[in-house]
Image (cartoon, rainbow, N blue to C red; front, side, top):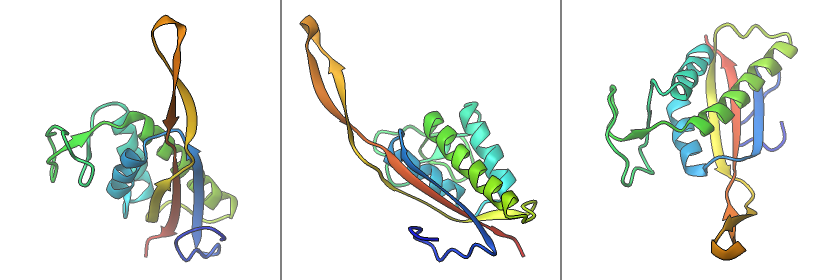
Length: 150
């Protein structure tokens, strides 16, 4: 499929892309890193536990001033709820795309999940005395490719 950074074959893969998601690109990178290689159902359960503040996401690269969290292989971590909810929608969309192609998605895994910085858009930051300061907000693009486990 055009535009994916993974050699995508529609006969054996199911894919989805979320563009311009209103989430932090740094948090999106950490969530994607934690999900790569997971089975589809395990990934959905993992993200639902993150949204419910039961499971922290390990922050490996963007870990400055991030506190320690409990868990195996966890040094620093956070609960990026907004990012987890957005990526969960993209993963569910990839699963639905696989079902629409009449492919059995019971034992699928995430073979490719990547994020990149999206467009920047301007917002306003309210100040004293009725003024407002312009502020640039960031977004992220996420792409997911699923493949059947062998």
